[in-house]
Image (cartoon, rainbow, N blue to C red; front, top):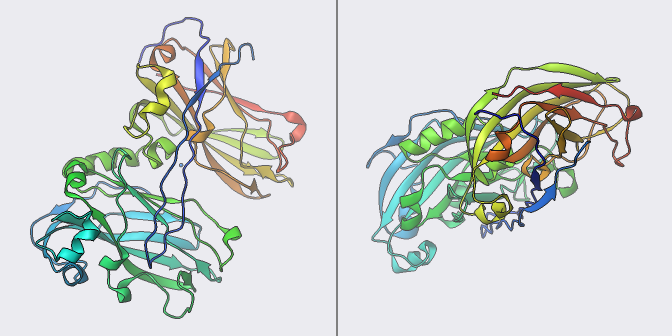
Length: 411
């Protein structure tokens, strides 16, 4: 993209995106609905991250059934639509606790029992996606994993509900050594889960998105750890291409919550420029610039930007805490436009949720997001990214209010 040397005083926006997420119980599969808030516009201040690989999706009308119980439960005729035996979907909640989607399959259900139609929105036919999930707990502590799932269509407009009764109880994910369902000791555990897809939904799907909740230590919900897992399930050839492109994007919430489609037009992901704030090392790892198109479910929330196209800048940085202080994971940043002609704050609610502190000796990776109208972005020539001052758990400035700045590459 070209940029013209003109003065900018842009009106930019602070994104207020609130997702609600409730636990999913295997017994009745209650799934959360997201309730996002509108985007509100703020003024520019003047003078002042598992990866979806491009695996081949095997599509056929025959093949081995992953979920043989489905025919018994529905009394219907089952036709295999597609099977992915090696999706390459994995997520680490910590060094010791990980999950993988080992395989998944979509089947078409027809000629079902009348009683089964209630599970398909009272329709005569439908589709079921069944996936095999493995939880690997190599820690020395028991963990709780409720497998709270949100599964949405590509454009995030439609929920694809869970159907626990489509899977035999002896194939549910569980630790048989525990009396409490959802509690897991050290070891590896594998089970099946299923979701219903209507005919109308299936005809539009390419690569639906699944979010799986975080585990917590023992049965103490206040001791959660890790980040939510986000997986894309390509079910068409086009969906596979889409998932491959998505896997190359920094995982801000535009990607992980299907808020917007992003198409990269410039990136530099190997910058790795280091600067220090006393004993804290700040590393600018890379930047990505993308055209941003809000998905149908979120389009109205971008109305303050007008009808024109948008540009998103996502910055990846790491904070290595070599000090003795606790450093908040909420990082203060700002972007100076064309040698301080204007300053903008990041769109924090498009960034991955970060809470708590960086302990001494720990390293925290962060994604910082800025959103522009394309016509305003095209006027820019220079971008200077400021990190700091860093703050403690009480939002009190640390290290004598020092900060560092980086000159960002632009196309």
